[in-house]
Amino acid sequence: MRTALLQSSGRPGSTVENLKVLDDAADRAAAAGAGLLVAPEMFLTGYAIGDDIARLAEPADGDCADAVAEIAGRHGLAVVYGYPEREGDVVFNSAQLISADGTRLANYRKTHLFGCFERDHFTPGDRQIVQAELHGVRVGILICYDVEFPENVRAHALAGTDLLVVPTAQMHPFQFVAESMIPVRAFENQMYVAYVNRVGQEGEFEFVGLSTLAGPDGVARTRAGHAEELVLADVDPAFVAASREANPYLKDRRPGLYGSLV
View 1: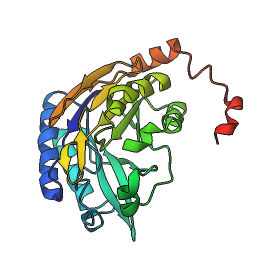
View 2: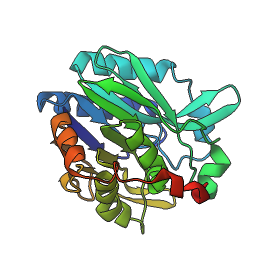
View 3: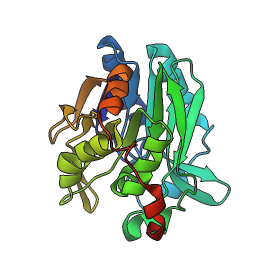
View 4: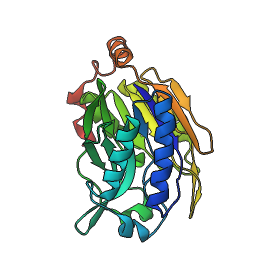
């Protein structure tokens, strides 16, 4: 499954403009043969927008979800996008997967909030594993800081995730996460990891780009730079299966020794 990573901060504060950016990216990704397009964390609204987070937050089945479903259907590819999700008086930092026929396949709420900014504006989710089947690939979702906790990624490995998509808002000076940690996470858990970042200055934050898709062999299949960019790489479920057969990590675990971790 060809996967497109949209490295962009869009137009913070404007869902209308961000939907246009997503539409253009979907058009280019589909023309390149992609079956999945992944956009960054909080892509629909912008990340560093303060109280506008609560103002622009929508339910998972809100108007913006309908607009993304229309984009996915018109271009014939699935889309993962980050957005602020409202449920009553509570707002979550969420990411949703919508299929090429417009079906909402999965919705994930970020479980590990980073820093005072996120804790001031969001409630953490409480569901660790969210997955959906797409073109013979089991797709799981985490968001940014979540992937830095090895327990989260290992839980996905044990649940059979083939491709872990991670919309992110990774900022300076933590670029080592994209450069080093993501390939290691992919290798030690025997899966593909698509880490899709914002880029450039936004409020007090400087997002570092470097979006990457790493394979279960720890090799980056594609890596963006520090500018707005659309990069593509292939996810091969047969390669995942062969790699898991050859790599003993998951088979050689001794869970009985790990009780002290929790």
